[in-house]
Image (cartoon, rainbow, N blue to C red; front, side):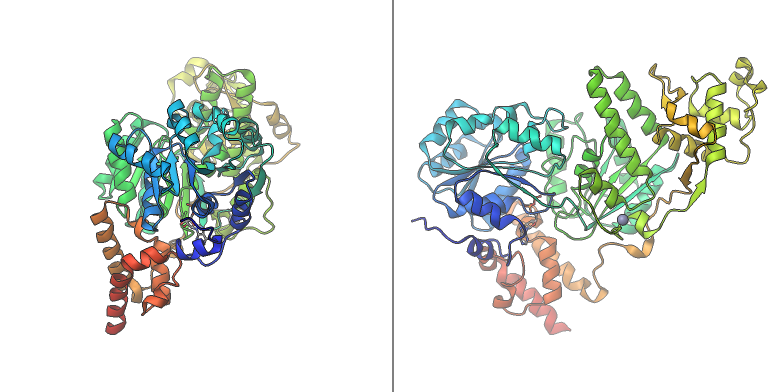
Length: 602
Ligand code: ADP
Ligand code: ZN
């Protein structure tokens, strides 16, 4: 007999959390009253509970549309651990289980049903749902309706059918994509004009941002970063191409790290295996193209590294957002080079897209480059892109922690720009640097460029410094890449004030690839290490027996609270965040035994 339970009771008893986070309670109340909602919250903000609690609380089942099968499986596992009747319908599930799920749905025994959009849209499924008691529709990753976005899923465009066929059932759409344009598209395409909109700050205060550039040494910088800061921890390394993914994964393996490649060129089976290892084991590093990520809700990813420049701030924000969903300290680290800027600009120029789209992509890239180049707080710059204001510098990004030194690069820039101009605006960086340094390049004689005034006028800087300077000129849009695709540079109108001496140019001096060592982000005190390891070991054993990822048993945050609070009775263990009734009954005794054992020892 389904009774209407107050939401807070479900939060406490089923999920083991004491308080709602803003705006969870209001979203839940909105759905309970039968109204639609649109929820814009950052990754890790706690979107799932917004629909899970009303779905559990109201009679019937909540139907969740989710674009990725791996994600569904994870959510269903986690809900079952908490004692919630949850199931999924998608192409990876056996016919027998599908029949059972449909039966449970018909007889009102399910609380939550996760379903892939293509399956939902089948007429058979829609008819099934019409025969059952559905208490809400949740459309997860709602930005997949946006054709401009990078996660576009055509089936999402047809989800308006829910509104037409089930006008009385409240709908909730959720996304972590913040830009206003996508928001409007979601409302329009899903018919959510009447929905209440809930937004929360997109700040992810637990993520520390590092961005640096140089013309060499990406691999070693990455290795040092992982070894010094994230030894044995889970992370994602993003690269632009499959080839580079393979190369980096192989190299990290050879260095003794537990790294696995992930890209569209691997077989479906390999991809699944690698993803599963990442989800289930503790310290796996996935080296991936952007094909990896959407729907990864592993909460304890401790770092996301980019070995290339993302195309836009949206992409960067979404990819880095996969770190630290559990709220514990995490790092976003990026290393990019001149070649990235040239390549991305060329990709935009040479694409088949229409002029309007090219222009938009160019602007997005410019905003990304401005973020890379800023000497201000990264978080303030990031958030202002999403229309938010952060009053104070954050104190948790590279620029805040180590304010970058700057130098007056006006004269050097004039020389570099003149070199571009005098050589006819068609040569690439390598050649221009050779001219500036009067290097031995046979083409120089051939073109007669040894007679130019700019020939050899740049000896005060090294070749690397010149390359860095050209990178900055590109970043700032003072020079542009030619559209023929040879990487030749030409002046942009923005370069004139510098050439005429009407404007100065101040640049970052040296890019420091390594965060300061003493600021390792997540540190377990030495006195707690043994207990921490025992708790983790026990969690791993439980997870293995059940074939689920360890975090489905308890999150790291929950284990860390056990370390801090040292509960010595079941009653006090029950107060640890993340320990709900079902988990207390299933695992309480065994975790308590470990805690008691350590208390006796010390
Ligand atoms: P999102 O879907 O927004 O990325 P999740 O729903 O996965 O975020 O939640 C992120 C984490 O926050 C999860 O570990 C979840 O259990 C936890 N969480 C959610 N709501 C609360 C709450 N009210 N109190 C404590 N932890 C919460
Ligand atoms: Zn900052």
